[in-house]
Image (cartoon, rainbow, N blue to C red; front, side, top):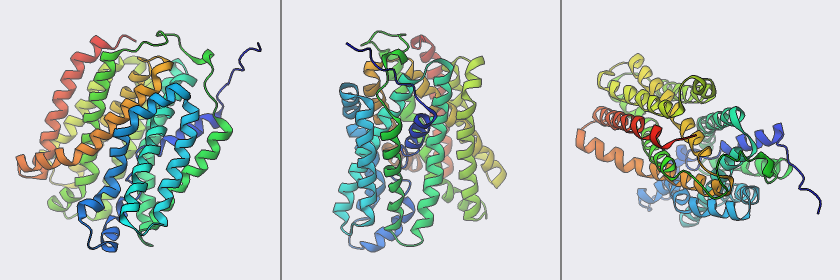
Length: 389
């Protein structure tokens, strides 16, 4: 029998995975600016149904993520990723042609199914293609790509929404481009790329549970910024909407910058402490909203939160990647996608509850800050005990 041909990932392989990763958080982001126009196009439809155009993809990811991850382990990561990109492109772009709200919601569910496959397989492929410090570096690039994807694609969706509510759905044609890139550059990982750190069927269950919990909390915190910051700025300052955009943009830039700096930081600080530092930065930024009455203070708050989210996200992914064997990586990353998107889906309800309890947006942010502080303390104690890699 001829020996198995070893696949060596190329620069195009890395770029394909990173471009695919920009799609992971754009389930609703790209079309969110068009929601008012969609509501106007369907005036007799309940606004909560209209909101599902944005919220349904994360819910679909949460429901299907683990199952698709198991399929990736069974049939192969590339064999699942390539069809997922095609599903993403077809389901997403179909919104440009659809004039029925219920058909639109069906297409949005399948957008989530496509993203679930992309999320599960991209990170799993990184863990199998790359090793050691190179893996840490690529995971940092991936997390930065996810953040920049939201920033760029949400802006693009806003620009296209100026021309009508159908136009933002054209952004999903990116899925077709990356689909063809994947066909050219991706192959199933060779066994020679596996680290051999863990047995073929073993994984660190306790570390994975801690990471899932951290991902859930982090996503709730992340979404309290873009969804409520504009209202907070309008209530407390006379700054323009352009300034709000700049504040959100800097939050995203610092998020990505910390992702890119993660490899250097992890060389001098154990990663289980980096996760706590990330949540401490988030806590500091959120609690500072108590005294935020001008743009410079709000800027400091959002920058601290962005830095914390960047450190936290990269640490979670890196910890997951080194606490699971290749044969289980699809399922574990699928579970990560479920935790991530349950956090995103739950954020609306958590934020509403905190506003009701505290009586204001300021109180909501401060309350969220204390949640982040408690999480930082818990992870400082728990993660070193379970993360042995």
